[in-house]
Amino acid sequence: MQLWSSKMWLLLCSVWALHIPGGRSACARRAHPKCCPGRNNACTAPSRTGPTCYCDSYCTRSGDCCQDYRSQCGGSVSHCVVGPWGSWSECSSRCGIGSRERTRQVVVPPSSGGSPCPDLRQRCGCYGGDPDCHMSTDVAKILPDSFKRDFRDPWRRYLTTVQERAPSYCVYFRLKHVGLGCQLQGWSRQLIREQLVCVECQKEAAGSNGRCQGDGLAGVRTFWAAASLSSCQGSWVQEDLREHCTCKLVSFLFV
Image (cartoon, rainbow, N blue to C red; front, top):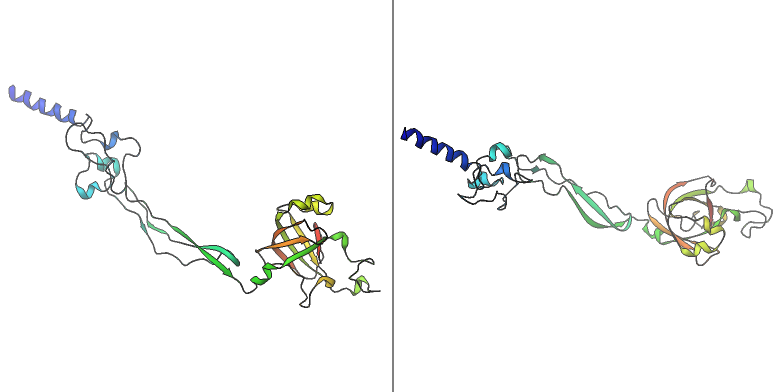
């Protein structure tokens, strides 16, 4: 009878040890996260008695895992594995300061508290050096389309007819900055930030190369100024260029 009582007492003590603070079933009682990747000395339950046990994935190496680590944390820890870096992208800016980036892929995702994946994307600065970048420094001079060439046009030759005129080309810009001075005059009030505008290059305004000054580069921010308003200026980005056309949108003229 005494032997049976001793065995029952040992059994009760073992069950009690698993449920008191500091018992070996610590992972189940942890607040989120129950399990931790890598080595984390704080990844354990408060312990009042007995040796401290851990719920971090490093415990499988150090041999001090809590008794319920495998059941709570999956047991088989898988650390993240990534592949090699890919090639660097092109510079985001054709002209001036920009950025480029490269990426890599996850080969084996982490599981059961394994080490998390490192950065999968890297970015660095670069400087765009397109051969035509010198054109981005040209400032376009513009007037509203109400100044379209007619008999009052000082650039037009005497007795020249519309049919004889060389074809124009159109440049579509997205306005990125419009100076406050543009709000002081009537025609320049139609210049609104983020608006798409069409600027027409007619023969009279073209240079010796057949192009108008400041017609820009695709995707590059360039600058413009109102030819008749010294306080009205801003910047835009060329979105499209069409040969042999006339503007139909909110339109202006290169001068």
